[in-house]
Structure formats: structure tokens, C-alpha cells
Image (cartoon, rainbow, N blue to C red; front, side, top):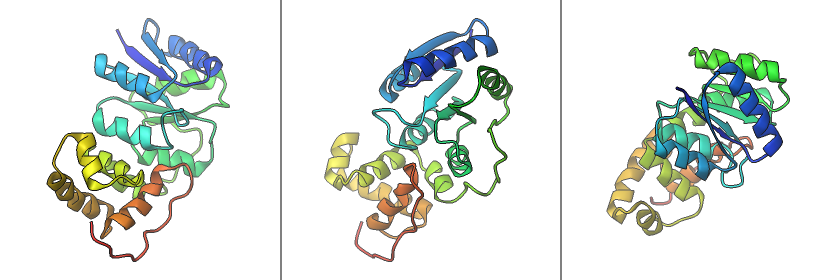
Length: 216
């Protein structure tokens, strides 16, 4: 029996998603949650066949939640639902590893169609997406390991190496070693450039790293 998690903080829209799931995957066990933390609890509690994830949750900043879930649970298909429906956002969503993008303006019938195709292994988007349009910094960030991504998010939040080390339960030397891999995968030379690159995780357009050469 399929187990599907629906993470959206708007009760009415969450109910609409649950209705779509009931039609697309009859008999599925649906876990509802208004937060990213709740979605992660459900993922940790047992196998999940599909996660429907709102991009704008109170405890999730932009694409950070999607990138983190994809890093920690790469086998779980994730469908993003969002009111931001422009082509660039859709392309970036797919670049971060989502299996589909459902706009909040979609009718129930379109939601059911999208979920059915995604469950069949297809990638679904409301508009045609140029395969190369979302493969910049988003794809590089998506290539980070779970630990590397957590470190990048720590840098984005302005945390020092020792603070990130405490958060992850590792030594500061381990963080410095991981930073080398983070810099290499992102194509940057230092933590300042990495922080700028991490702006790709926000819903705003990313910017190019500058030429600062400060130490890690």
C-alpha cells in the first residue's frame, strides 16, 4: 500500500491535494503535515512512496527543503507544489531533483493527471522546460552530499565552522575538509563565493560569485 506525504501549510489546498491523491492512487495512506519538519518526521518513520512539498513553508526557505530532502532521501520522488508558476521556477525545481511541479492554480483534474504520470515514472511540469535552463548552480548544489549540503546551508545562515561542527556533531577539522569538496563541486574558491552561490537555494534569481579570495 502506497504511503504518501502531503506537506502544505494551507489547509484548504492541502485538502485539495489529498483529494487528488485519493483519485490518482486509490487506497494510499496519506500523511498530512503543515511543515517541513513534519514531512521529515514522516520520512524518518517509514518508507514513503511520494512526497508532495510546498516551496513556501514556515520552516523552509526556498529550495532548501527540497534540496535537503533529495540529499537525505534520494529514492523518494518529490513533487513540488507552488504558487510561483513561472518557467524559471519550474526549471530550477526540476534541476534540484524534483519529479514534478504542480502549480497551485491547477484544477483537480490536472493534479490527478500530474500525479498519475509521476507515479508512472514520468517527470511532469505545467509548461515545456528547456532541459538546460535549470542546470546551473542548482545542479551543482544538487550534486552535494547530505553533509556537504548541510554545511553549505550553515554557511548561508552565517554560522562559523565551529558552530556548524557543533550542529553536525563533528570536529571543526572535518568541516574544513568537507568545505574543500563543497568548493570544488560549486566551482568556487572560498566561503564568501560559496555563500553567494547558495543564493540559488532562494526563490529569487541567483547571482554569480564575486572574486573575493578570503580563506575557508
